[in-house]
Amino acid sequence: MLRRSVDALAGARVPASVLTLASFALCILAGVLFGTGRFFSAGLVMIPAAACDLLARPLARRQPRVDFFGAFLKSVLHRYADLAIFMGLLVYYSSVNRFLYALLTGFVMAGSVMVSYSQARAESLIDRCRVGFWERPERLGLMILGTVLNRLPIALIILAIGTNFTVIHRIYHTWKETEGNRRSAEQAVVAGPPFSETQSPLVARSEFRGEMLPDQNPDSPPRNLLTRTVKRGA
Image (cartoon, rainbow, N blue to C red; front, side):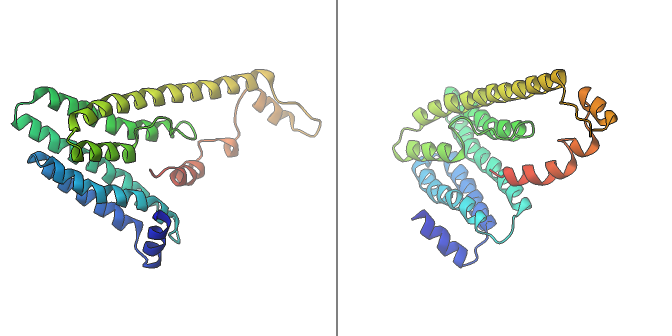
C-alpha cells in the first residue's frame, strides 16, 4: 500500500515538500485541539499527519533531483510540529490545574527535541547516529494510540522515559565512536606509515608527525557541504 501510494504521488508529480507542509498544518491543528481538551479529535487529526510523514521520505527519493533545502525545511517544520502538539497539552493541563501532567508533558517536549538535536549534532562528528527507538514516527504513533484509546497519561510517561533514554543512548554511542576514532588516529601516528624509496622524505616526515596535507583534510568544505547534507535529512 505504501509503495502504491508513493507511485501514485510520484506519477502526479506531487513534491515531497507538499506532504511536509500538510503534516505541519495538521499537527498545528492537533495542537489547537489538545489545547481545548478535544483529545480524541486531536488523535484523529494526527493520523493523516503521520501518513504524510510516512510518505514524504520515499517520495523525496523518487524526485528527479536532490532537494537540499527541502531536507532542511522538513527538519525544521517537524520540530515546530512536535512543539505545537505538546504546547497544546501544556495549555490544557495548565488551564485545569494538572501540574504533574504539565510537568510530564514538559519532559516529553524536551526529550522529543533532544532526540533530533542529538542525532544532528552527533552526525557532524561521526558518520551515523540512529541508535535508539523513539524517533518521530514512533512518537506520533504512540500519541495517536494514547488519545484514541483514552490512555494519554500512560503514553506521556512512556515518551518521557523513552525519549530521554534515547538521548542518553546517543550520547554514549557518540562518545564511543569518537573515542574509537581518536585512539585509532593516535595509534596510526605512533606506528607511522611505511616509508618507500619512491616517497618524498618531506611527505614521509609530515605524515609521521600526524600532519595532514591540504587535500587530505577530512574537514574540507566539499566533504562537509555535500556528503553530510545528502546523508542526513531526517
